Image 1: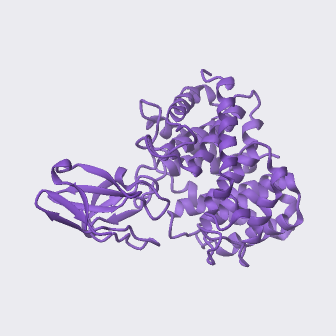
Image 2: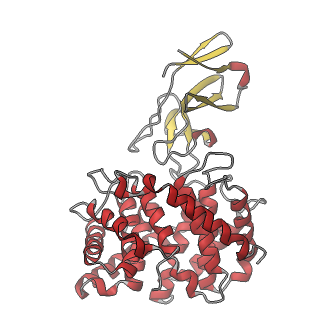
Length: 327
Length: 103
C-alpha cells in the first residue's frame, strides 16, 4: 500500500483532538443534538477505543430514547424514525460491548422490539426522509451486529423473530440489486453510488452468518465491481462527493477483505483515500471540495482513516471488528 | 430588498453561490429565468448549488436535486413532493440588469 500508516496516524491524532474541542456541538450531555451527528461521533470514540471514558454520552442517548424504542432526528423530537433509530441502536449495542451497562442493554432490547414492530410485510422499513433501501439497510445493519455479537441480549423466542425479520429484510435488499451490480432509487439515489456502498457492507454479513444461502457473495462482488467501475479518475465517487467517497472507500475495504479480493481493490482504495486526504480542511472535512468543514463529515473522515489502519493489518478480523461484526 | 447579483454574472445555464450576512443563497439561471433558494438542503444541509437541474415527466416545472441524498425541489415553489420539508425559496425581483431578493 502506498499510503503509509505513519502518515495517517498524525492526522488521526490531530482530527480526534479537534473533534474533542467541538464536544459541545455533538454531545448530548450539552443539550439537544442532531442524533445522526451524535452517532457519528460515538463511532469515532468506539474506533479510537475511548468509549469506556465516555459512559455519560451513551447514557444520555438512552435518556432520550422514546417509549417505542426509537429516536427522532433531533434528540428533542417526539416521533421515532427508522433511519436515525438504527444509527443510535448500532452505537448502543457496540458501545455496550465495552461498557456492559444494564440500562444500555435494556435500551438495545427496546431498539430490537422497535424494529420488529415497525417492519413492513415485504421486509422493509419506511422513513419519509430516505429511500426504502436506505431505511431497510440500517436496521439490517443493527440486526447484523445483534446476530454477530449480541445474542446474549435477547431471549430465544425474540432472537428467532429477529432472525426471521433479518432474513426478510436481507431478501428485500438483495432482490432489488440491478443487473449491473448497483442498487438504485429513482427519487433518492439515481446514481446508486451511496446506496450500493451501504448495501454491500450490510449484506456481506449474511455470508458470515448464513453461508451462501442468499448468494450474497456474488451480490457483493458485483456491487464492488460496480463501484470500481464508476470511480472517477481522480479517485473520488459521485461527483466529488466527500461523504460518498468515504462510504465507497470504507465499504470496499470491508467487503474485499471478507471476499478475499483485496488485490483487485487495493489501488481503488488507495486512490479514494488519497483524494479524501487532499480534500481535508485545516480542521476536519467538508461535504464537497472547497466547502467549509463539517463535523459529521469529519467523523466520517476519521472513521475512514481508522478503518484503513485496520485494513492494513494482515488479519481480516481487524477490519470486521470496526463494523461491529466481531467482538 | 437586498441586492443579489448582476444578471450578467450568471449567464444562461450557469449558477452562482451568493453569501448575504452569513446566509448562502444558490442562484440559478435556467431557460431564461432566474431562481434563488437557500443553499442548504432541509434534509441534511447538502449544498443545492451543486445539485442537478431536472424536469419531471409527471410534474410541470423544473427541479433541483440535492447531490447528497437526492431530495428534489421545485425551483419555483421549493416544494419537495411529499418529503418532510421544503426548500426555502427567495422570489427574485429583476430590476434592469440587477437581481434583488427579499429575506
